[in-house]
Image 1 (cartoon, one colour):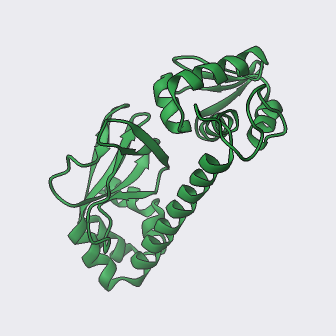
Image 2 (cartoon, rainbow, N blue to C red):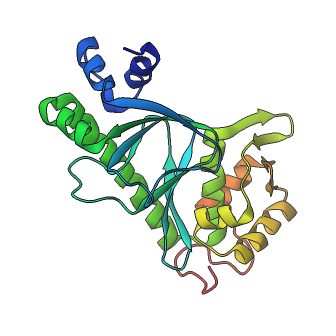
Image 3 (tube, rainbow, N blue to C red):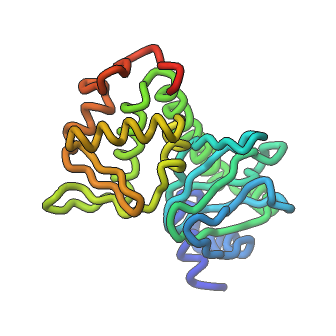
Length: 245
């Protein structure tokens, strides 16, 4: 048995609480693959039902419309399961893309279903993982419905800072390369609106969104924008979104 594979499974919440022999049995169903930044990990192109568990890195889950427009539904952290999940009935329409280089565990959906059917610990952990992702999706949907673009963009930057941020004398540096188009998808707005809002954040010396990194100069100011305590002129603070948002 590959010790690296067993160790990777032991650190994943999906297999938390398994005894060593049950962990080794589960590991026999999985393989490990690395994905480069920007590469699609799972999506409609999958020909076989598979479950993925992120081991290292961060990815984003998106829904792709028929006209090519994308909506980011959340970030995928290490330990989270995605893809064609057991007992779901059909394949999810989500597409997961690597934001940085990622290591991922992969298994046949049928194999994981068989493991969960006979092991209540795996079944419990799988249900908990699904509940956590549902809660995160609900929070993102609430932000889309009730927050203007500046608050949503501030929330995305805060979320990225929690995963990639490094504190420096000049502020918090987020070493992740995201285009304005990708950030617009994550914020659920247009690229033009995002450019206007990011320009306001820069002018207010709150944050600078650059191609290769994001700088947060005023963390408290960013939090105020996210909560609605500080508003961009011409943008609503609470309910009621402008048509271009």
